[in-house]
Length: 86
Image (cartoon, rainbow, N blue to C red; front, side, top):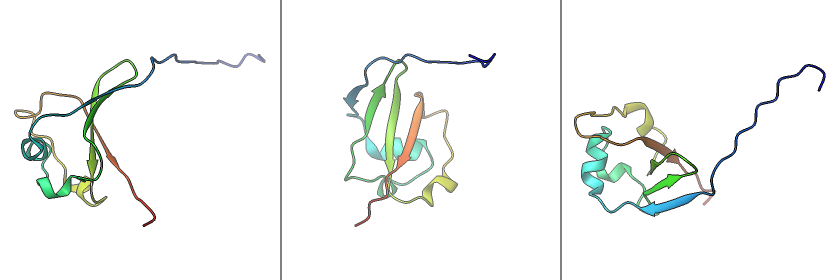
């Protein structure tokens, strides 16, 4: 291996569970409005070993104004932006 360090990581198979909470309260907890969350994509809890909430954001610009309200947000959050070529 020529003295190179190799790091590998094993992950579980992905698991997803639909989010069934209030989209409005979720949006408020991350400093957004409900309209900034993309309703065409699912909000899901996802895991390959550590659970996180995946939230689809409608516009990339919304990321710059996001600020978590830790008093309201009690979960790990991963936010994603999906841009389609439509």
